[in-house]
Image 1: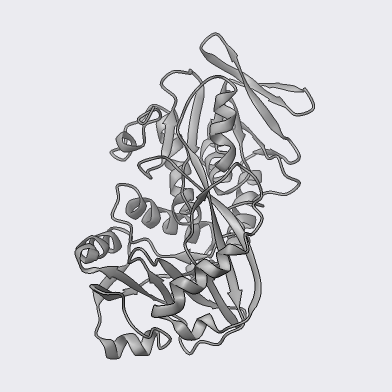
Image 2 (image 1 turned 90 degrees about the vertical axis):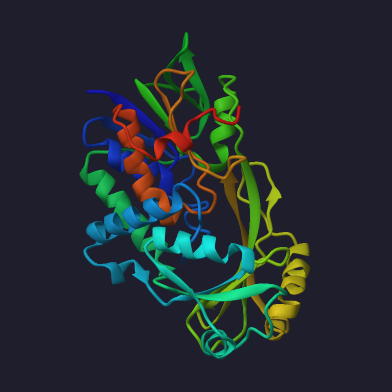
Length: 360
């Protein structure tokens, strides 16, 4: 049986391991003491698959099916509370189209309906329209990740934490395994890079350049009350911001993105000023709310913002599942299934746009 190492114990790594374990001997290596401690656990928990790109819609629809199969019922992992998406008029058609592909619906609403769904919105940005997104919601990452980890174990995946991979190892132009921080080498027939922000740095250890950049984003929990459960996301640049109700307060993000080294990011005090600027016109009442807590997370992107998924064309035995860009919990489970399809040499219409090395 093929011996496969999966590097990374977040949503990408667990999804890949689960999908591959049906016909492979899979070992998953996670650098931290626990699984899912980085982006998979530090996100806003928002299910809003309205991106008008190649992969988000179909992978979100399939992921929802798989999560419901794993957990037995949808309410165990997703509360569909709906959302308001604010977009510029020229992006309205794309958002409606993206929503349809993602298994939700989006339709324009008037000011009266906007006041019902998001009374804190004082005014829309110039040239913007508000869309009501039915089917959007808030997911439960801890339940999802615990269930997925259990499903991996049930399929025989050997999951090792505190296994800090520092380098890939080659034999000629073929992958031969990995080296850990303690100097231990682990041999394998295949290696899957599903290490999030660390994926590109690990590839550099074998001089394999793939352009993936981690970006820091802040989340802030405000001491504020809302009358509506709907998520609100203003996509209209240059003042992108989103918020939703959370734990008796309001969880907000200024949608900042600053290039970062792979790490557990610390918060930047300037992010609060940035947030206040973005809320000032669209939801000024939220600007006055005290901050309960804040944190930062990393989202990793390829230049074209598509997934990097599939077999590496230059290194035999190396595969990639990276560049999820903050969409991991929405598309990751189906992405793992798609990766397994690619590694088995089976065709799929989505794979062409995700080919490794397209931007090198």
